[in-house]
Image (cartoon, rainbow, N blue to C red; front, side, top):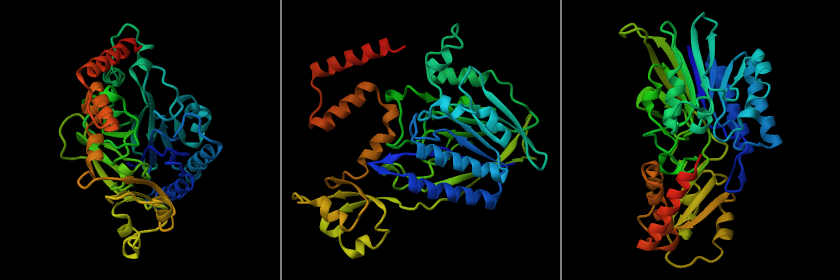
Length: 386
C-alpha cells in the first residue's frame, strides 16, 4: 500500500512581507504531477493546510483546487487540522467531501476519527486522524482524569484505541515529538510544554507527522515528519524539500502479531524561487561571479560582515538581488549560532529563554533583582493558566 505524506502547506503564507501564493501554486502543481506519475493509493495530509485560522479568499481557492485535483484523479485524501488551521473551517462540509474521497478531520470530540480503506488491489488499512491538540481540548471530555500536559492528553486518546492485528494502522498527527529538530518558522510553546514522547505512538505501523518543517524520523523509521514543501524561514535554507513516498509491505521475517515493513522514498521538489543565505562583505556579494552562482530572483538573506557602516545597503543590494528579504550585519564566527540556539529551545526553561532574549536585546544579562522579578512573573503566569 503506497501513500504520499504531506504537511505544513501553509497556503496563503507571507514570509518577511512577501506573498508565497504564486510559489505555492508552482509547488502544489509539482506534487499533483508526482501523484500522477507514482500513483499512490492515497494522500496523508498531516495538518497546517492554511497559514492562518482565517485564510484569505485566494488561499481558500488554491486549497480547494489542490484537493479537487486529487478527487478528479480518484486519489483519496485524509487530512487533519494543524495549529495554524481553524478546526471548524477544515471540518466544514467534510461529510459531503467524503463522497469524493476527501476525508477532512472533524472538530475533536474526544475520540480518534477512524477510516478503514481498501485500495484497488484489495489491500486494507486503518487510518486514524488526530488533529492538533492541547491538554485543555481533551480535559473537557474527560473531567475525571488528570490530563495536565499535552503528553498525557495525547497518550490517553491514543491508548483508548484497540488496533487491528491483520492490517496496517496509520496515524496522522500534528504534534511536536520530543527529540525532533526545529526551525524558526514553527510555533512552539516555551519550555517544551507541548512535547509528546514518541512512545505514545507504539503499535502504529506508520505515523504521518506534521508541525515541524524539517523532514526527519523520530525514534523509529516509521515515525516521520515529511516537512513543509517550501522553505518558510532562512533557518530552512539548507533543507532539501520533498514529498515523502511511503510504502507499507508485509514483512515475512517479522515476528509477533503483525508486522509491516516501511519503505521510504523522498521525491525532491524544485521551488520557483529558492530561499538562500549569502554571507560576506557587500562589495564581494555584488560581484557577478558571486550572484551568478544562483538564480538572482531567489529570496535571499544577506549576512554582511563589513566592519564599517554601509550606506544605502538595501538600494545597492536590490539592484542585484530584487527579492532580497533581509539584510543583517554579523560578526565573524556568529553564522550558525542562531540556528543552534533555535534547535535547543524546547530543552530550556521559560526563565532561561527570557534571560537569553534580554541579553540579546540589551547586550547584558539580568541582575539578581531582575531575575527574581522575572521568575515571579513567570510562575504567576503558569499558576493562572487554565
